[in-house]
Image (cartoon, rainbow, N blue to C red; front, side, top):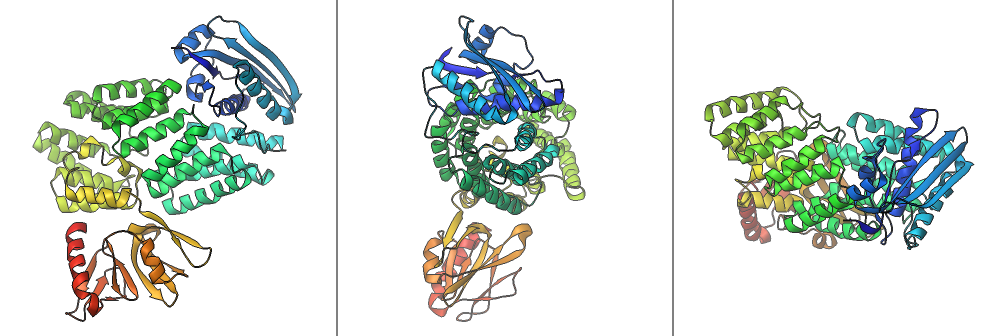
Length: 581
């Protein structure tokens, strides 16, 4: 199907003598795509699908048929010193004739104006206007320093490939841009993305990483409040930091109004809807993403994950296979193996597990996957061998997600106490894969258990709150981290588990009376006029009636229990002990 008012911006050819200028021509192409993607009236093919035709000599009519677009923009860039020549041709894919052909010979500093002119010219030809209510990524505050913009394009080029070992290079380049151009909003947004990546895959302390994300994305939006790239990054930050699904869906809806042609945003919406169990809507969003970006390995991979989680294994394998031919990822065969396990294709699954190289950030180690396979097959003795090997590896070497792997091992061994312990630790640490626990078929045997449902509800829905004080200060806290709250005159001290499970304290100017309504949840109980305890934590009851105290193994303090509250609190404590243990 060919969509009217649609365009694919093909990668501009690098005609410079230096082949390393490829990032520059790619960057200019991407900037034009970003500008056009912000209009309601133009359907723009996403970068990855447009770039699938890079260096391929294919007739534009065939490209139009494959991408479903009525127009193709192609061109070239020649850079020499401080001068740049950009040619651009808009071609009708049905008739093959040129809608326009332009040549721009300018100083390098004028590259932003050229991008604007090309985007406006396309819009005019497609009989629409670029939105005046949204900001194009390059339209508000262009860097005055051409070298700074060059660094910015290099950093984007690196970040797009998203190889873990290269993210630090992108970070260094964004920092150079900021040093040269302190008010360039997009550079701060780029830095925020680097730290969002560090926090999401936990290559550094998550809390520390996300604090840097908050600082940099806030700075980007202070400089340019309408910056779409900044709002998209902020959305990622809010979700990965808090796992607040309703808030994420609300922000996604607003963002889609500004970026209706963004396959990335539709993919994000599909995955959050999947996590929330809204399968039909998730599949619809993913279908739209595939239409917008049919050649994207990222979109294909996420589509495979969605289909796997909805137990459409044949269709999932098809998406993963499509991705394998176009991606630098090396964990796709591993995911195909999981589909084959649930299809009962054990021989094929084992072959894939044996032959697939282990991904640096692979969630489930091969030993655990093979143990699961043989348990599923019913080969108890071989399964036990792999379970023993898995436990040995987890305990004697460093792996990316030990608690998640241990939870699977103990589920297979039917050791429920240890399974719940390690699954809760995974959720508490907000390991990214834990988001999919509710919908991943490998947990199907326990998903309807009350304990499982309680853990999901506790850790995945609205646990982040902003505590308001009597000053302008606000304090953001993840409620499951809180141990207890102590009143001190018109102040409250919050005692909580910080990074690496260290005990941290925060003194806020707010009374316990004003703070208590802000903390929602049955687990938070007033035991005394000066104390609120989080019964989700493993408190122990000490003493005798009328002299009861609550003790915690990580704390020296003992929290008193008021005589007047004794009966009510003890009932809540008993109930919580049964629910949270």
